[in-house]
Amino acid sequence: MQVKQTSISRFFQMESAGGICLMLAALAAVMADNSPLQPLYDQLLNMPVEVRVGALQIAKPLLLWINDGLMAVFFFLVGLELKREIVEGELSDIRKIVLPGVGAIGGMAIPSLVYVLFNLGDSLALKGWAIPAATDIAFALGILALLGPRVPLSLKIFLTSLAIFDDMGAIVIIALFYTADLSITALIVVLACLPVLLVMNRRGVESKSAYIFIGIIMWVAMLKSGVHATLAGVIMAMFIPLRSKSDENFSPLKDLEHDLHPVVAFMVLPIFAFANAGVSVAGMEFEQFLHPVPMGIMLGLFVGKPIGIFVICWAAIKVGLARLPDGMNFLSLYGVSTLCGVGFTMSFFIATLAFGQADVDLIFDERLGVILGSVLSGGLGYILLKRALRNHTA
Image 1 (cartoon, helix red, strand yellow):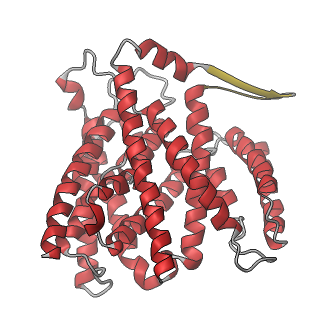
Image 2 (tube, helix red, strand yellow):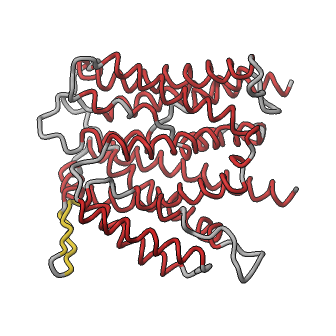
């Protein structure tokens, strides 16, 4: 039992450190975009990068290589965690997943509803309805780490489980609502990769390079298909063997997950934050903050998230569908619900899908809403949890 708790503690420490790196990268982006370095910052993100193999060509600015390429690695890690948790982790026990599961439903539905109410009648703005539905687990755990060892393990597990459900919802939303015109030929290539991965899984293939090779083919085909390329990472993760056929003490999935955690936490996500969090405030007027898009995102994250999660969790507990985890009270439940309003990485990512390729001059900056909503949620969540945990300890 002690070994299990130690490994869990190390996992949360790594995620927390990654959250701090995210904060620093986002701050660096804002500073760069509001300093004499702004032209260099824009030139860097718009720098054309091209890869060509015969007739196959992928030409994108650096920003899209980051959003479509590096984030596929992030989604691959999400898929690995998802499979492990479903097979043998916290999500394998139905009694433990009811509360974070229903909480995640409320935490996605109510923020989206808040956003839609602010933007009714604007077909372009309504494309961003899913932006406030996301939770950034790295940022949230980074803030939670500031409270020190007083945070009970049950609260961290609840937050992580809820965020996993959130990620599942985001994956479904991206697949269903943020897909461009489809290329049947490219989709056939994607589908052809699936039986190959299945045979590799059934035969116990453990070679990382073999899976990576098929994964790259599937990513390129997904990129050309019109379905967002990052979903290739999630799909490939489902075929990585959880258990080795040659060594019962070895898990290819866990080994790969262990190797990817520092890469994602300290490289992929900070680079994504630096590339997407740059918001120029030069010449910005107060009316821009009040535009329905940033206001809908901000209030969706700051108000809709905690209300959606807390109310449905409270109702599930009161009717006996679930129980409050040991070490938590209703104030700490509301505090962690507020902390889930830190959308940041996933909110930025969905925002790039919703508005990144709009062919009109936008009069709003959706990133303002993400930053303001995340900052307010993180600050209030910290204050509420600090008070709740102090009272609980007493």
